[in-house]
Length: 453
Image 1 (cartoon, rainbow, N blue to C red):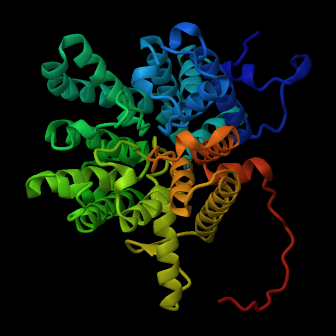
Image 2 (image 1 turned 60 degrees about the vertical axis):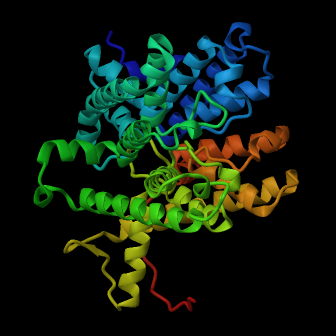
């Protein structure tokens, strides 16, 4: 009798197949299993230089699986080579998505995916169609490995002359995987601050996490169509919004930090300042690396980063947040309303009301998660509001930047951040789907007027 690979994870007790699979719940359970496994591996005596607590191991595993980068134990000095490789494996699994590997394995073994299992894959990729989800599974893995391989070669050119062959190659591998998956894990306690004026490493790392944060649909369509006129409206919007946010963020960091003696003011020459501003401007949308001291940034820069971290990257990518598409749709809907137009349009194409409502739900749940996280952490940790808010939004966007609060959270505070990281990685809309099974109502009621604003 043929057994589908994904049936192994959809069986209930006594070997009976589960009915009415809830795809987001299945993804959540898979992530929790991976986190538990990762924590057990990181707790092994030969995975650490000094023994770590179960809480520290669980926090690190959660941060790696959710590709966040927040740490309570320094990765480079406290974890052995084995521990660091475990972290890399968790990053890779979390970045590409557990369902990618499940679908790839099933297809490789010649199994056919049933409709229920296709729905799981569709939810995992957040794709538009089932055909796209099935086709994307192989392309995602191949492209990710190719992008990481190119990143390793580029970074090795800069790390090897400085660190030697083996250390240089290892640093290149670690940072390429961490950067492409938007994880932000580093082998140094001050991240990439030593390379703040190094154009090769700075541009290679930013290139990797920008590509990873664009999303697989965008990359595949760019490789396939190659002309602007042939690109879909979605891809055009994502590319333009990404370019706009990156340029504005770079300019804002340059403006707010130019005279700050603890950040850009300490660098010699305009080009070094511009390079550092570029890196720190594009990082907040979920990459998590830093070449400047985050705790020394001005209040204005930190507040701007809150917005960037909340927005995040593109759908179907290694980044999190509410996603660029959600942010752009909300802006476009506001503009259309102010102009008296009930249709939300991009490039002479209108969006369905369901898409607009989905964006609204995603943003609303995201704000609710951040509010509850900030409220909970404020009750548990004695710190100023900006530092607490920065920590929570960084966790929600799975960014990994911190103003120095992570190590002072305590057990209860760490549990809050772990929950926010997991919610941020799975997506606020996925969380809502998990908690409430959607059922379309066939009942229509008479409209009524309702004051707003």
